[in-house]
Image (cartoon, rainbow, N blue to C red; front, side, top):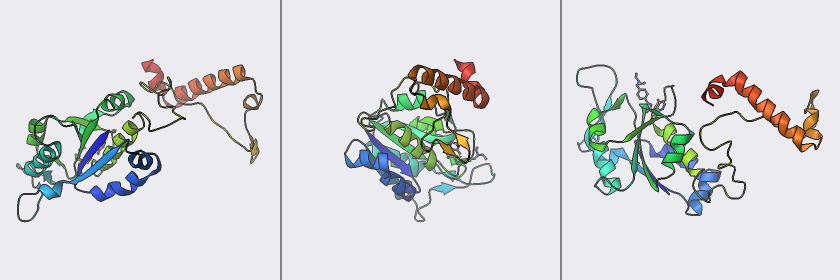
Length: 229
Ligand code: 9D3
């Protein structure tokens, strides 16, 4: 699977791409990530990629020519050659079902914005899928693009290897429930003891305790998830 990231700040991605799971997937050739600097497609003598909004107002807007030229060049022209995702606060909220759909593509282009937004004609020409990662304000689309790469790569065949928990029922599909509490050694720390049942070796009781714990924390922290079930 291949990602092409279109951004004004390709250097933001380097440390992330060297990281463990993704770094290994790239090393073994399972995943390829190409970075493209939108500024390389600037058309004027000042290499400008943004300009002031018609009609006035604060902030700057990403110009249509460099963005469209960059996308078309990376795609190799035509509409084919990769699923285009534009990261914007106006996009559809990312969730696990959306990640699973994205993972069906063998090539994804991730278009990251900065400034106040994109010239609207970029949307009209390129017809991207617009995605947001949540209702909070980021400085740009780069962190959102990394979140998408991270979530999608975990689902790519062969990336997780043996301890593949990504396709276990409770984790695939929509998130339905929070995980139960986990403990490891020591059995006691600052007078805090591990629940006795987890030390009992009684797997039936342990399964029941975990089920209970999972439901209880979901009710307390994320009641919205229980409503959806
Ligand atoms: C003042 C209006 N703002 C819209 C909410 C302007 C604005 C803020 C932040 C325009 C762009 C940005 C930069 N954010 C992203 O590019 C972005 C984003 C986000 O801010 N939150 C969640 N998901 C995403 S995906 C891309």
